[in-house]
Image (cartoon, rainbow, N blue to C red; front, side):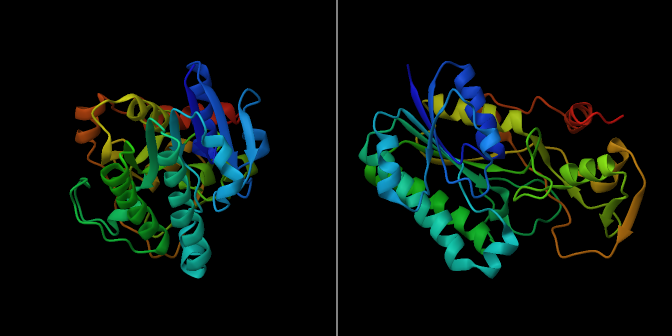
Length: 301
């Protein structure tokens, strides 16, 4: 039986990944300090190590015998990284180095890193491609880019097979409307449940590339088993389609209110040609389907 290790496995994306790996018959160990992850997200069939990735001695034992490592643990709050660049660097960069180093030391077969489309910075019209120049606009975005480069170097220097996945706007089951990955979909559904108006910044015509967490999980698993992705390759994982905030509000339903715009990218859109070519992956859940599913789960009409 293959053994998988998931850092951040009590979080939104990590816990969904853990469930899928267990369903595939793998033995799974989770490392999480529960600073952002939730104990109720933990699958009872997984082994749980309550530890911080900054504490290399506390996490090393979990790497012994691991075949696959999925590194989803991070401190992903953009504004928090601006206000606390040293602390977030220690988690996002030094923590990643600890996980990479232990993976190399213990002969892990594949290391899959959760990166972010934030590395691109402000987008122009058109789809973002992996060979577009990186232009991080926050410490968090820079951390992700630096870690992608560390993954590449660990493949080149230490022969650790790695791949980095740049997620766009991930949504789905277990997303916390107040958490680090809080996106407009989760916030709107929460407001609708509370009978509150859906708050839209600016004119609502800003667009986002929303990708369902199940599609993200599938990309992780395909990457882990791919024999072609071993050298720190970077892949976009998005829907390849942009949807406006106004359209999201329409699908969810409810009265909207408009407030002053904030500083944010006007549009995000992924070009996922590379993932389709190298992984035979493409998104299976449309935003409409994913949102309607979330509404049903929350008992909303």
